[in-house]
Image (cartoon, rainbow, N blue to C red; front, side, top):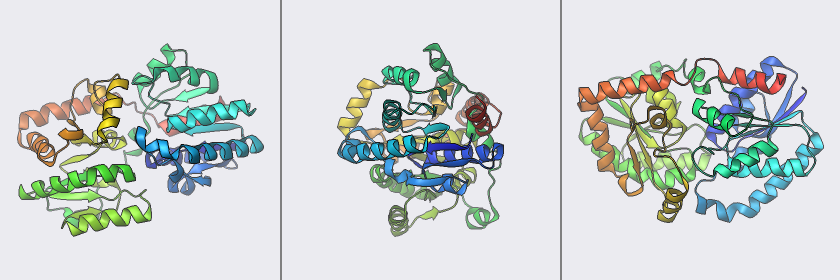
Length: 372
């Protein structure tokens, strides 16, 4: 292989792109990797022709106004991929756009391999997209064993060994600078997310939570995600600073590792918290009509992966009107103050971590992409 196209559309996807690109280049240092990437993908050796910021969207109603722009982006990428004719196309997460892009590539005559890294959650909702995976993709590389099993049962070519965060989080440590700044405090990590949508709908809730936590003797610390754009990061810092609270601009993983517990927006951060052995209160707020639509479409009881792995709400899920500062603080205190609750929760989290595999997933992905 000489040429691979990789596309991602958000901070977590860019992290996975970076992990993959590093392993691809280890196997083949002369390989050209290019596509729609962020800072992680670029720093790992990829060439960003488009910025992953193009796909930082969230919510059904929020996507609708962006459709014309996304169609133009799809057409632009399709033309360039067909022209360059890479040996493989790797599409990471962002299923609404990437399923559309894969179909466009096939219709435009691209004959190379198309791989879905982090395929759509057909096990949870919109199961009809299985036909898209079977028709347009040569291989799926899911994150979890239960996804892999579902895909195989529905005739999709799938391979799985481990979750990439298992290997990636092994080296997470609390730095001396963190210890000097917060070492003597009872830190609670507050994770407002990495998208404008996340921050818009959750920051006020978490600021209210921070006030209650501080009154109880804790040190609330807000994460300023490293993948945030400059203006959004500035806005978040200013809001937190104006409210009199601390923020951390280093790794969010380090912040969680140095904390007693976590509260934040549902997403990859919940898996990271689980692998770091930290309890988390998962929140998710959205427009009422969006929530009503999703309740009819989604066929799973929990939105957080740790809860899916344990079959229980080991992480409290507070959605929409339930996501209040009072409820978040109550759930955190319940875990921190009740030794029996804490011990039971920690055991469940340990069991969930054990189901995530042990091998280097990114190395496995790279091998699947290059050798198969």
